[in-house]
Length: 403
Image (cartoon, rainbow, N blue to C red; front, top):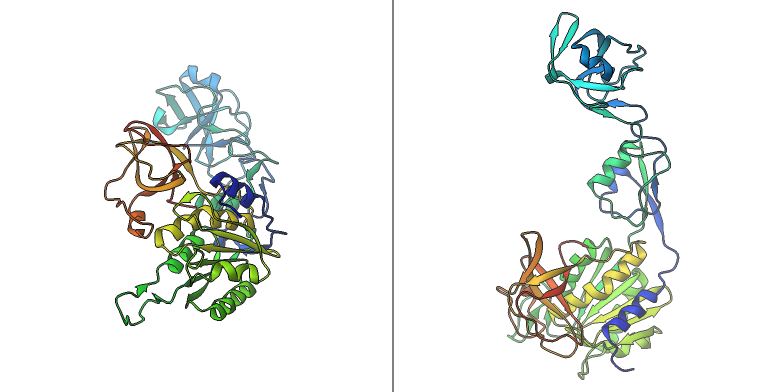
């Protein structure tokens, strides 16, 4: 199986089937950050009647020219106003109250002077002023929030306004993470020699998985032993929908993962993509579960997780939005380093109405430099055909602030 283009690998990834999507019901206040399983449809108009948008006086607009209008009384918010406004009369109406029958305009308090039971018009207002029409916020039958939407504060508020107490959301897919390598140490584990390094990979990708809406099962660090790695993968498959490992997919003598995954009975969808970093990525499927073997270098495993695992997570969540891609202007020259598709760390800012990227503080080196992802980091996307670019040219950028 030869190395695929990035575009072909994504085409194959998108064609994978996550099976029947699972749902659960949660209370509204527990729904923040979850993904909607069903459209939210308005069952009424909002407002259901013309409503005052300010404190003032409900009047006939044609009466404003008279300069004086008689006050019939008050109409507080929440009251069931049954009086009607006729020519020469008005009702003091407060914010949120239904407009009395007959009134077509609200003149705010600041525009009048009260003399006894009469208002003096100091400054007229346009017809329909400060009156919220029926259905201004939404109309009955309107789809307000589409399924697959990640629920934020606005979605919570809209659903509360619809009297929705329980929300149908997608069940979080379970992502099992493990790092392979005899040189890898867990956090807190004593270092015995200088060639041993701390494991960051499974913590990094677990954080990304959580941000993307998944539930994470941490399998920890697994030493370079075929039987041990095989057992770890079997345990992971038994407890997760997506299994992600880092390390062991290259061509070294101790890179067992690339051989273990097909030995588990998984179908290898592809292995090897013409990308930098992460060319030795492996994607496989076993039944309704997915296995991804990512490279071991920290930056490489992070980038490949973003590109290949997040789309799978979103499949389980019924969401089509993976990450935000924008066009940005180079603040300095950019030199592509290979003939592969590249994903290069940069700094992304929004200045004077446009996105701008630079490379201040970003180090050039191997695919191990995870610190390049600190700060306002983003990824410049370069195709195989792209070459060097000058300052002022446009580039495609993947934003990393939310997934």
